[in-house]
Image 1 (cartoon, rainbow, N blue to C red):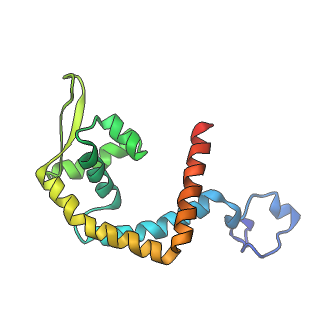
Image 2 (tube, helix red, strand yellow):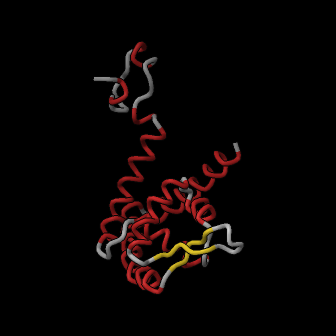
Length: 160
């Protein structure tokens, strides 16, 4: 068995240890495992109203903050410009968001439409159900600790 796939409790020979960390020691792997499991819950619920988790996040971000420049929206959502563009396309095509003129005529601005506001309202009970289920599965204390830990980590990594 390759050491990267070795169970955490299995002893790894010294030469295998030099080959790299086990998945149980890889922070990226662990974070992706957790994120995938959590995202499945949200995707399943929001899929009932025809939305992906990222799409719902974009709709609610624009609804809460009013028209936004695409670059500001990408920053707020921690998305690359290309990922934002890819995620905006279906929302604009379906009439939930629109891209219009910005404040100075040289920029663009993302606006939520009446249909987009309605879709946000339709999605809210499903997002709430997913949130409640994830919190139930993880446990309230763990959720609080996870949120605090993630905030600390984000601040530390962002500062470097």
